[in-house]
Image (cartoon, rainbow, N blue to C red; front, side):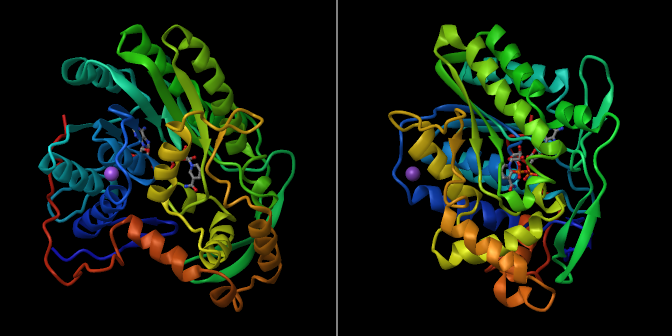
Length: 395
Ligand code: NAI
Ligand code: NA
């Protein structure tokens, strides 16, 4: 079939297999251009199909020839209906990994559930025996609690007061003020339950009690801080409370890993266009200004560049560099004073008329469509493609 982008708000309902494959191959090429390292060797990535998790899987496999198991939640294709992008990404990754003699298998299902955890444990026991790295890169709006069956929804709201500032509709380029009502009721608790650290801890507890974690095992979850501009909706909003909880959980997990000298880290990553971030108000306008500044400075990175740097210069450096709160920082270039000062200046000038020149709206849009395999260089979109793609290592 011919597959075209079909957008609704900040999501795209279709995905292109060839475009997704091309994105994955480009990420693989990037990692192959870097020196090969010794670690990690046996890696479990939760949230492995898109964004930072996919980049973590690719960096593991092609940076140090690691065996990888990926867990994700993606929609398979059906006749005439393309799969979700993470499905095609995973298919492309596993196809290439197998060609290159790398172990790569995956599990598609709800990572929050006991069933998927047990299935993953079984696969680790059967195939790898143990793992030395677990990357926790879930981004989900909902979580069904495995013990009670209760379904929690996360919200993106400020806490304490109404938030008013500009945002951009990146499809139309319209810059306009939005107003978001503060959280109420159980909003904070629910968001922490979905995006906080409880599920990460559950994964570790299960795998630790089954003795499948190596000595010196490491685990990393991803967080975000960002500038004062987005603070009210992000870091000091409901999602920020979940990130606070996730960060606190890292210390708890490190405690539970003491006897195997294991360590849990949170890595604070850069703001990037992913399916998760395009859903957050204000962030698209911030990102389009940030991209402009970082590209001009020659310090722009995508997920793969970020994670390559995380592995080579942080996680597997002689000593893991941490901030005063004990976190890994790979948002260091985004947060540079000169970068933030420029973004703030541009923010004041940003209107529907000025944004195309003072911001990188095109870069934002391209990245957004790229997430779904569209607007990818070198792909012929007029060519018929088979939407029914299999994932070779899917269990
Ligand atoms: P993403 O939307 O690209 O990836 C989410 C992944 O989680 C996908 O693999 C998806 O299949 C999987 N997933 C979602 N629900 C699942 C479920 N119930 N069971 C199994 N898998 C499930 O998101 P992105 O942006 O890569 O986010 C990953 C982490 O990085 C999040 O914690 C996010 O907060 C963090 N982060 C994101 C930044 C950004 O600007 N995009 C910046 C800094 C941190
Ligand atoms: Na390499």
